[in-house]
Image (cartoon, rainbow, N blue to C red):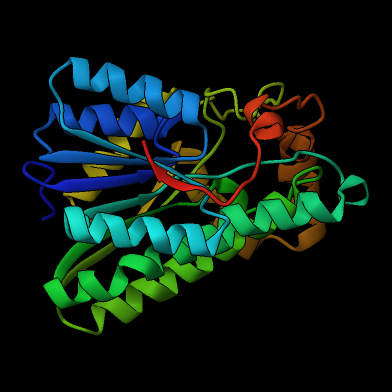
Amino acid sequence: MTQLRNSTILITGGASGIGRLMGLLSLQRGAKQLIIWDINRQNLLEVTAELQAMGYPVLPYEVDVANTAAVEAAAKRVLQETGPPDILINNAGIVVGKVFAAHSYADIANTLNINVLGVMAVTRAFLPAIIERGSGHVVNIASAASLIPNPRMSVYAASKWAVLGWSESFRLELEALKLDLHVTTVTPSYIDTGMFAGAKAPLLTPVLQPEEVADAILKAVEKNKILLRKPFIVHLIPLLRGLLPTRLFDLFVGRGFKAYSTMEGFVGHPANKTVPRHNSSLKV
């Protein structure tokens, strides 16, 4: 089983939301050091100061995961200073939340570059060193949106479907190496972090609390779980999609349980709109 205690943990998007909470919880459970990658310098400095004031070892890096050169430069520094992380959590992500016709080309590119290529680039940057060491655990935060279509979420859903498919295939590749290598893929429904402000969860689907999700992810890592789906009703989506004809699924789940209208009131988190994209891979 993967141990949090005495582990080096790297979390992308680790300066806010569940990324910040996972970092704090991992340190409280005995992690040796926490490496935070985030594009938002202010949040990065604030969370680093907060955790260091508690006596925890934290290494902050201002990194745009959508920029491959920045990812490679930051990864090189991490490898030189601490070696490869024992646990890598690919948490950074954005959502636009508009009908596809209203997406600009920049909206599409930013979503895919951060949510898909960023996850792959970060993992690829550390993978040779992790394989050489013979142990490591990669956590990929997908979404319940990777299991179900949803209006006003087409590009985001596409990005998370891609993460789920890649993550599961990647897991099989690592398992074939017969080493102590693990992959956990997380598919949560709406989390109350502000990222999906204005959205409404489907009927019988509670909005998840960030602390609950962060704790569940770390417990899944410790148990080497392959998939973590939350809340429980998310487990039913693949079953219902497999059993029901598409039109019945649309009627029963999409309209009956209001799964297809969850994004009608979406306003989103200001951070998704105001954080500039740049080429930085600065350690701060």
